[in-house]
Amino acid sequence: MIDFGPGPGRSIPLSPKPTSAVIGATGLNLGGWVMYPTTRSSVRLRLAVALEPRTVWGTGSRQRLGEATWRGYVVSAVHAANGRCEVCAGRSELHAEDVWVYDDQYLHRRFVRVACICDRCRAVRHFGLSAIQKRSGMAAAWFCHVNDVNEDVLADHLNHCARIWLWRSSQRWDTWFPELWRDADH
Ligand SMILES: [Zn+2]
Image 1 (cartoon, rainbow, N blue to C red):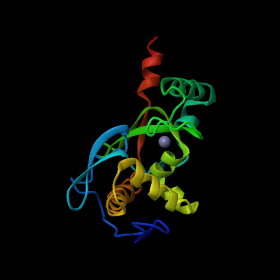
Image 2 (tube, helix red, strand yellow):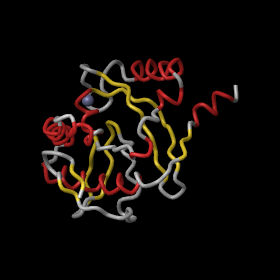
Image 3 (cartoon, rainbow, N blue to C red):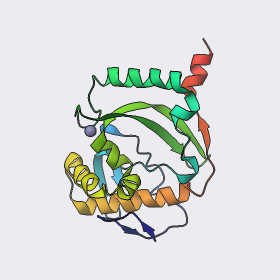
């Protein structure tokens, strides 16, 4: 069992590897509505949990791109978002958030961009960290509010994400930065 701390979905059964139903959730959607599978049906979410595999912790874009390049991405992200959270349009406590796509077949993750999101939306994406920080209650309430769903949907979604996270955390990942390759061509 994995413990996500207090709140919905705190006890999640282990699964040795994702089934085809759970592969494919990338946590990419920010602000747009994307369908996610649940145990009963699919649910439409505009803010999803996006748990980084344990094996890539500490290897975000800031570390890999270097401070100057990373700051350029952050300035562009804040400008593009007009100084608002890309999910909820809030203006307070904005964060730079890495967006990655995971390829579970070939075990690589691709850096997509830096996004501009607020502290509450970030707490939802990093739900495991929020639980450690005793903020899972706030994150749970915000997930339900932004997505207009109840806590049963959250529990199901956490279960879904935790199964992906457990499998991905048992793998070694290559990291790709396509944007850097494009820049290098010029
Ligand atoms: Zn927000």
